[in-house]
Structure formats: structure tokens, C-alpha cells
Length: 180
Image 1: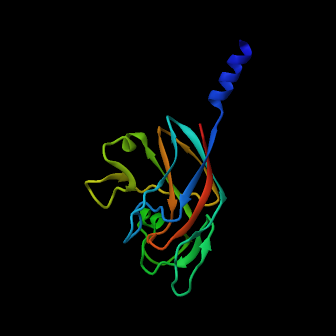
Image 2 (image 1 turned 135 degrees about the horizontal axis):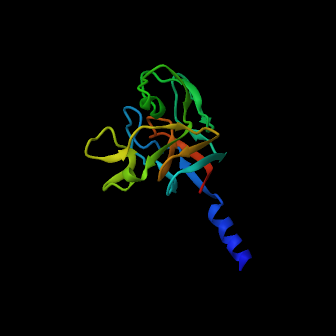
């Protein structure tokens, strides 16, 4: 009986890991002018304070970026490009438009509190461009090859790609997400 209780105690405190695929076109309508709307990917939901770890496993994203030459596939850290006045999701959250960025096509994430996720009509897209839509507010994390982040409340981590025009994107990232 004691051995069984110890096994139960260990299993309830052990972190769970799950594999998640983040398609190259998952931008959640973030960025500007965002001509296509593809929802972000649900990575993990936690029921209270926790530590979440996202680890890149494999894959590349081709962003279709060809200005002045084509960029080709990028890894989870993305690539450096001139944005030519466009806002990418990570930069939009910071109010930055135009200039050079270091992370086009990078793996990014946003943690959304449970109270927002549970609201009627919630969708995993940008909730700032349409006042009637219940969606995600900017609060991006650069994930890249990996990130460990503590969260202070119940909620869901969503993952996506740092690109404003995902109509010509392909590929994706395989990641492992670990949490309680």
C-alpha cells in the first residue's frame, strides 16, 4: 500500500511532455496588414501557477520572403530581414513598424489567462483589431530554440510563427512542450 501511495505521489508531481506541430502559417492574424487569418496552436493548458518549457525538436518554415532576394527556409530563431514598413507579430506587440528585424519566421508564443480563454466566443487569433471578437491580446514571448517560463495563473500557451503575411508560408516546427 505504501509503495502504491508513493507511486501516486510521484505521478501527480511529474511534468508531462507532449509533442506539438506548429504550422508555418500559424500567425493568429497578428502583424499588419495580416492578409490571412490562421489560428495559433494550443500548446498546453495549466490549472494554476506552473513552469512551462517549450523545446524545438525539428523543422523549418519557408516564409516566402523575397525582397530583394528569396530568404528560403528558416529555423526556430528566424532570420534577419528589412521589414519595409510591415509589422510582424513580435514587433506589433512592441509598437515597432519597419526597419530590420532578427526573427522573421521565428517560433513565438503567448500565454493567455484562463478567464480570457473561457470567455464566450474566444478564438486563438488577434483580439485587438476587431472590438467584437474575443481573442488574444499581444504579450508575445520569443521562443526560438527553446524557452522556459513561469506562469502565475491558470491559462493556455499558444504557439505561432513571427510573420505578417502567411499566405505563402510552408513547413512548420515540431516542438516538445512540458508542464505540470
